[in-house]
Amino acid sequence: MVPRARQARTTGPPGRGAAPVPAGLFLSFEGIEGAGKSTQASLLAEWLKGCGYEVVPVREPGGTGLGEDIRTALLAHRPGGMAPWCELCLYMASRAQLVREVIRPALARGAVVIADRFAESSVAYQGGGRNLGARRVRTLYGWVTEGLRPSPIFLLDLDPAAGIRRILSSRGSSPLDRLESEPLVFHRRIRSTYLRMARRESDRFVVLDAASDPQATQERIRARVTALLGG
Image (cartoon, rainbow, N blue to C red; front, side, top):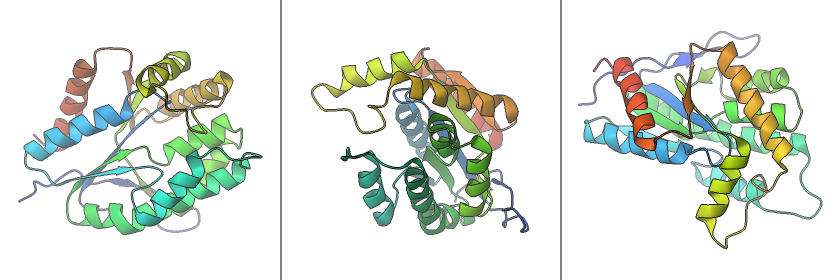
């Protein structure tokens, strides 16, 4: 039997009532390229499974058949590039499908959903990095997810130059994808937007130093999640 998790936080889309509050726990990992989000998310998922929880890991973009097709389109290099609003709408489309097909059903049955990125990535990458405006992206976020928002959000903070060096070191001869290949100033805008979000919503964000020992970081994450699950 899956222990009861804390309820996920919801905020209704503009002009509508709040979405029904699911029974499970919905949390996410955010950060710039190379910050170690995927590693920390995987470690937490395996640990929670060992504790007897039903854990549903998801990634963005992707997580569904349609979402994986969109992921391929988003990360591929293409002549002429991609218009920023096209990029944002593709991310949102993948997210809408993931919420409907995977996240809401999992939360309804009491599972712990661990997202390797969620809509905060769009606020940071397209709102900040692409200069589309964080406020406008947040408004679209509310509509697309029908008010569903993760809490807590573990933000792995790292200097962008260090993040790109990590990727280059681990990738070997494999080329960087379209977003990883953006100039450093783009990644710095993303980091600044993440940190502004964390200050603005300190009740949801847990900022972690991604340059510190990974196991020590994981212990901090587990402690926070244990408290939320009533362990």
